[in-house]
Image (cartoon, rainbow, N blue to C red; front, side, top):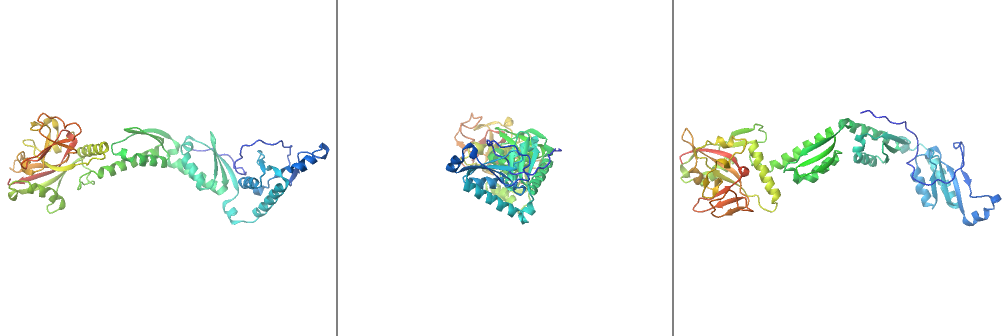
Length: 451
């Protein structure tokens, strides 16, 4: 986006608001030296009053060398208890009012400053003279006001905001650096084209609200959080950067909840991954399976497969994260439990992208219509699926049991109020019942013989 910038004009710092005293017409300021004025003269009979008050007004021409030192002059005048006003036309002269000795001290101060500025000081040569620049404010510039203010503060520039323009005062080189910064931002942020964007907030984002707001501010975006949506306004590129940042936060939060051995480099929607024997992951599944299976000494594990169904896992950990958000002070209570599918082939569950374990097909059991998961493989072995090769298959599932209720309630179709699951125990047949499709995930498929 092109900008129309005005010509640079040599001046001091921005004029402050004041009420000007009456100033006589004077068109030839450049050739004047300091001129003293009083409130009256002997003809008016005011000499006695002036002497008694000791109060004088002086109008002083500001040498061009001191054009950029208005703050210093104002500070010096204040230290001498002088009232000072700057002539608004080009700020080429200063009107001082106060005690005569203080006016003389100020004149000496200006003469000394002018002499110093005539010397080839390294700082002055490096930064150049003070300059004023007027910059038209595009919607993009207005939008990035915090970034511009920060840049001006870093570069020691004085800035005034108008309705349609930005006025900057300071050393010429630093103003040029600011201009380069502004042009760079224009290029980075899509030439100042602003958009309004609604970004969906997942349950994983709500724990990072402060981080997202800080990132939006850093990118110069206006934002407003709703429960399941964030509304942002700004150029396309930083909006896209915020979306990528939020995706990264969500991925980070999800990874903390994924199973220990999940392969994040596998981009397939569904994968069955054979777990090599004698690995920690294989032992994670095989050890509790063999130890809790009656006659486990005769069992032979043919293979163990990790099931990576991205859709089902995303639904599962979303539920877990939501429960953690709702009950931050309660333990998560997530367990690895066994499950048999009887006559149903296991792929009807692990290859199902809609529900996985599905309550629709669950029969009424001793604890109502729910999904039953056992702590002991011996219980699930009685419900194992038998393959064409006469081997058996059961799942080791990742189950969110949360806060469980222990008791015998056969007509249940959901857990009691305030609980997430039911728990039954007795004679080694410990099992949990959940009444929600996404409270469980078929994590491993165990194929075995000899039991």
